[in-house]
Image 1 (cartoon, one colour):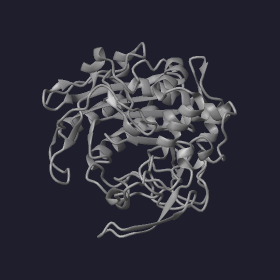
Image 2 (image 1 turned 120 degrees about the vertical axis):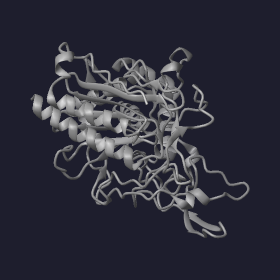
Image 3 (image 1 turned 90 degrees about the vertical axis):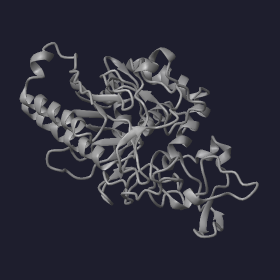
Image 4 (image 1 turned 135 degrees about the vertical axis):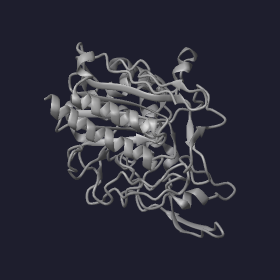
Length: 407
């Protein structure tokens, strides 16, 4: 397997800086994961509030051809789309065009009359529904407390087959009444529809005008231009019935276009572009003199918005995802679009840090207390693969070692 490392060009003294012990150790850690074939390739970026501190690429973008991975590679970032969608909605909240505690059905009539599972027979598929105890609010959808789910997070949703004439615009009946629990779900798809309905723009257009262009995220989009196609990392997965074998190419490969963009996923981006997004968050909503959110809005998004409810570490219901073991089970909280860290783990991010990831093993975190953010991108299934999480953990620990050594 061909391995290459490309250092960040953001610092004038990059060549010398890359020889510092912290950088060399981080390079060695990421390169080693590729050489052991733990992961096929990885791009990693560290930024503080002012500049990129580290950017490197190792491994291949395609296990079938051996195409080298480069720092400008485009990744399908899947659920790392969710924070972008959440920022978009909070821009509209800032403008007074909708409120967090308004019923979302006020803007989306398809949400009227939501039903909740009263029972579901896993053997026969028979089910009984009842009306929801309360309408789901905008805040419920921003915080994954709406009662919605995903087929890979819920065996009930996985096995549910609606009766003739029943339709569920965002996937299925609610698992519980809005506000009662946290459950990872299609809720951010609803947030995306709210952005479209309230703004009058399609998501691709809204994101480009109000987020990507102002932040100079020129390589982030749902639909990848044909000229950029050669930079797109191939979709890959671990072979085997339980996805525990060698990493292989998925067939067929998805195309460059997304037929119907949704708020919960679908964007393609680079580590550098997403680095600009997280640096904007580190700077309280502004980057390079351009403001996309008020500082108080960014602070609000990082607060606990689920009260006494906690975020549980989900068991996966489908092979394309492993269990959500990266969550501090029952202790972490959720803000308006982000997981918020509860505990200080030695050598890692501070409490109150914001984070999430995408199903193809792309991840980020934002540590406002330390003024540091990290982005790490791989491109294969299953989500939360143990070896991918080990690379993520080593990268995060290496980040704080590097920062401590250079400050």
